[in-house]
Length: 406
Image 1 (cartoon, rainbow, N blue to C red):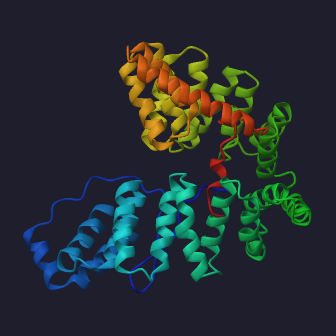
Image 2 (image 1 turned 90 degrees about the horizontal axis):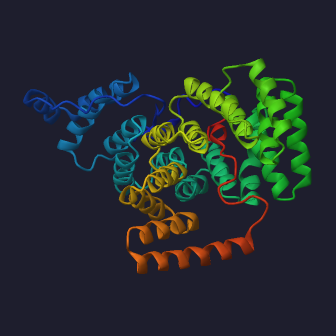
Image 3 (image 1 turned 45 degrees about the vertical axis):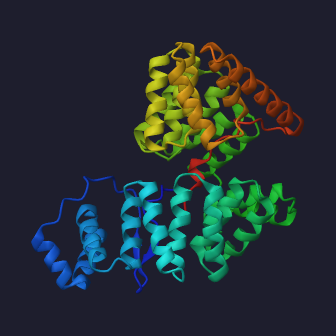
């Protein structure tokens, strides 16, 4: 259950496999010299080959320079745009990545690998709704694509499309039934879809290959968390941590369990351990910010919320946390700015709208504020009628599942 270190992507007409992994952002590409531009104009094929070699070597600045030289000669080089998209993905520059990949798609709509990368760019941002159409198009054209099927199945899973998830994931059994994450997701999806036969099959196989292992204890702890069985969750997660203290996400889930038990000292300690192991995952900073806010440490809370947003600007719970801090400090303009960001990304967030209404009233914008409060109250009432066991915002995040099986 190692974190994803690389994702196969396809670029260029030759369908050469590239890898988009955890490479950190480097400095922006240096300006090309006139001599370099001249060489590109004389031989764009050489520039493209140099770019591919640099990309494989992780020299992102050099690769970007070379592919831009190709585009200077041939603005319709889809493969160059596709490779630029890969470079931006490695830097986690998602807006630029999508812009480059979408240009490549327009120029070469027949290349399914470009659409796979577009879906992956959304997936990496936890935007599972927008990841679905490009993944669906790849699976439609290449139904045997393991990667596209697995990622599409996860997207269905995270959008509570249980039957769609099982239909997409079950055919991968022959290739993935030795992977615990796959079995765990399939087991839950089958249970939710009331597919008892498949549920029992996945659960039996999960126990068969994993029982007693740290990874198995982690998944069982996660299952107890989702059922609000916090004492059992702690027991399983502690067993996982004892078996492998560096197991990804074990400390994160322990932090969640202790938070629910209101043992904030232990929760804080576990989130810090997770951050030490996984410094690029926003969820731990977000949850640690929540613990600090709950215990009255607003400065530390704000620091952690900002850290989460630096990694993922779409982390709405961190923006809400900052908004509440700023509202408490009577920095109403700053609170309003954070709330506007939340509502821009999720117009149906009734809690954000309610707080926004309160902030507007306190700013003296009485009419606007009362209208926002009325709108929020209506939303909350509608949601209350449809509410099931899991309340909005209470679902346990699953960053450990957003990965391909090994």
